[in-house]
Length: 391
Image (cartoon, rainbow, N blue to C red; front, top):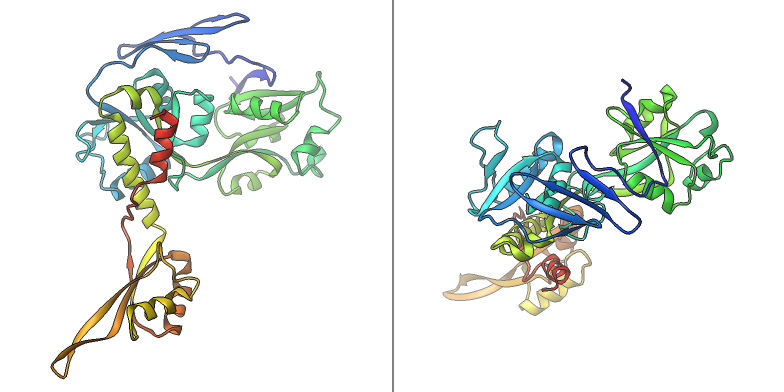
């Protein structure tokens, strides 16, 4: 059997659920029901009806395999939320610092599905996975949209050769006269929701998609597809297979995100408080990861005079301004302050420039320290989350 199968058109408005689902489609509604030993949920017109399943623990879904899994565990560890797994073969684990949380290792797409079914309350996956399998469901809420790993983009790619040699944009691709009802543009992809949606939004009428398992890059060379729609990181694999991205062909920029079930945050006891703590830890760590703390001594007549000199330099403003304090020493039997210590936070990318500016205004003994956390009075993402929940 070929690895490329299940051809469908971009005009399809309903995607069939797995075979275990009962499906009824009419002009007014699309209804299906699913059941498991853990939850019973009815879905009407894509919206989940009924309350969440009662249980004491908060379930947190994490990727089970691959680089995303390792990077997720590293982030949690850096935030003092290490995951303790008794047996690496088990799919359930604990976070000792969050006693009411139960970690479940799942495939990314299953994390999204189980958030929607009520079997999970929180999860970490790529934005591409949320968008593809969540399909805009209002019960999914992005709590943190930039965890700073898993960066990639969902992009359309075509061959560099043949009829595509001079095609460099989505507009040019769409205007090629060869695409007709009888001979549509063939696209191989694993994104059966985002792909057709993107093509429809960009006016490509004559397109068919084929689902694929495995290396999509081979499809054009094998004559199975004209183009592919796949995740791209560096683009090296595309180039090695004589494929190219085109202008306007990026469907989605993606990275790891923290996502939650709206119903769970509102209805499950402790879910919102736990989410708040996880969010604050993430925010504090990620903000600190881009900063250094710089300490230096500077001779001056007063703290105000030192502050004026520091603030005259564009790279030395810090997060809210410099901290200036006297360096006290005993001279001739009296305590005096000829030097002042300044402490500022500077972006890592501006470190050397900041040190040069400090030296230029009389700074000496410059010390550089990495930061672990920077806690704000209140994280903006928390306010945004409460607003989304109507709280």
